[in-house]
Length: 479
Image (cartoon, rainbow, N blue to C red; front, top):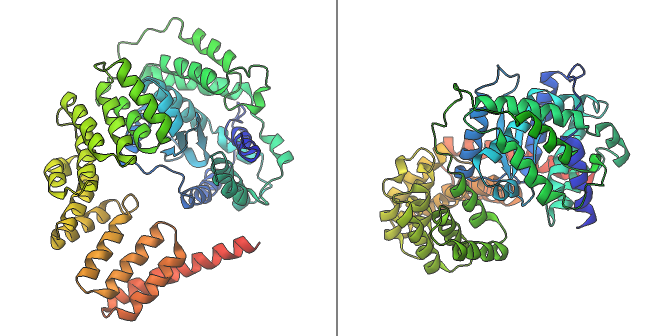
């Protein structure tokens, strides 16, 4: 493993799994919120959070269901997926709970995911992160937020290590992390509280036990002799034994909650594999799974994931074939239909895309996604007015999820000979994808052509904001 990457993984373990039992020394809620705000700004700017509406909906459902059995909390909990193939999860400042994509795709059930999420919720509910921050409060809030964000970003592969190092620079010397060393006691407390929450929820607390066993098998094979303070999950073997003891006489209570929703865990798992995991090993794994069990309970999900991988390989006919196979098993499944419509569009068949997507626009989770693809199909068919209405509808509902809608609107406005507005929307698009330099160029060009006073004011306001951010970032780079 790259030594820089190893260091950042090590540091992230120290930061997010270092919690004493007492919260008497925890920093104030406003102080932690300030750290959390700066921390999240840095994370979001690096675009490391997976922006997938379907997967995000699932993890929020799991987290919020568990939270419904807790007393009122001092923070508003948020749940995120980090887009990296790492088997990890953690609680950040301000009750921001993160699970890595690699964690979800390595688990086998919604109960296992709920077990690990429940454990992280217990860390946040116990204010363990607050105490960790309190021990570091001699460091400025900005530096502390940079250190935390750098640890997360640096734990990922490729050039992300450099991005993490930039955020970490000047934040904290390696030796100073000793005060953040975690203990087995805090993990024990989080396990015990997590199980208590899970016992009341619709999830089986036994999922935490099997999840821990996967952690031990996948992450720490042959490393039992390594000291706990360099591991993500300290004392994994002893934790498994302790959890087994707690659950040895577990009988689901009569008043245990029912899962009123289908979390679609397998479909989401294979969606994450098909859309975001490394193509070659995923392709080989899914083909092997399908060959070994062509008509098993996971067949629809495997065909779905395989179809998504084929699309990434630009083998669209094969992608369509496997999505249709999945649809023959899960009839009218909107998760499959929305991707089938997208791939028809990629394959130059916009009318088939529209026919496939029809009716999904009212679906609570995938409706906006369907509208985005419908808009793109109408644009291909030169139904400009309909496309424009749909793209604007998408931006009114989820601008951060579909920044490409700004780009498409710019194209439509260009076709309509509205040069000023076209440059304005291009400016918004590049701002959304954090290319501030190009955004500023387009907003300046927009001001050369715009006539409407309101449009001019909006462009000037956005331009002023971007120039301020651009100048601030350049100052940081120079220092």
